[in-house]
Image 1 (cartoon, rainbow, N blue to C red):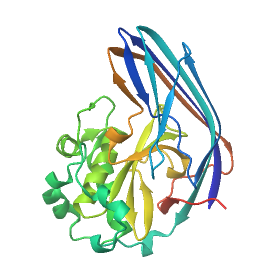
Image 2 (image 1 turned 180 degrees about the vertical axis):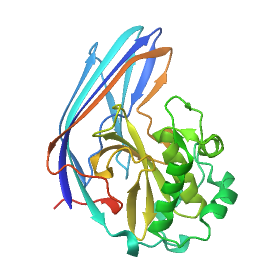
Image 3 (image 1 turned 120 degrees about the vertical axis):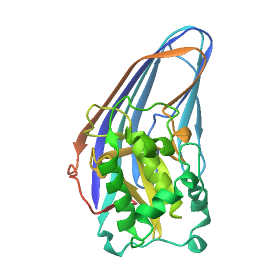
Image 4 (image 1 turned 45 degrees about the vertical axis):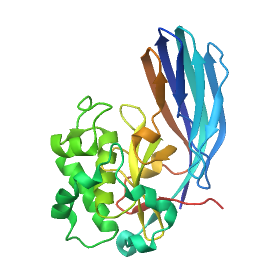
Length: 281
């Protein structure tokens, strides 16, 4: 079990041509395995913010409205997270009849994860494999080996089906493909947006979780950072649920700067063990 503390900073700047609304999802969630110790949000110009926290998952959104001009957002936080490594050999899949009902929405196809269009490919590649953690690990290995990580190769419209066809993408696309493959095998899977310590170049980072046995486990087909170096921002069916910024109006983003610093604990190394968030005592 590991307890780690991180300091993070997010700067976003925008140019606005007309009255616009911003819906941001950049604040880490508070859960039984992750605690926001302190945080500061500064907006220039100063604006009123409205915050909304989703039930169950606890995703944190805030809304601001602004006339034409410029907006500079500066968010800083100190966050403590807790993860546990587990030997994956005994982790099994759970049949749909025995899944907790709250996991069922993560079995269905979604906007970016059209699992129903990938069933044939999934059955050819993974249908004969032993069910369990090793099969999801095989999915991640397949994505890592067959999809090129290539910045700028996709856009906001790119889906898991597109990625399976084009064989190129970024972390968002790798996560969507992993989710779609899992759902095609009747394994609940969901999208997780994060800050990531050690990611180069620094940016928001996407991974996915699969429900195996009786809990959620983290997977990252990109292998870009240790999974214990993630600070969770949001969880959803796919990226549409947890976009870091949703904009309504004529807006141009001029700058995005992300910085994550490890400040306490033992910095994690890459592992092939199962990794899951764990409740802090």
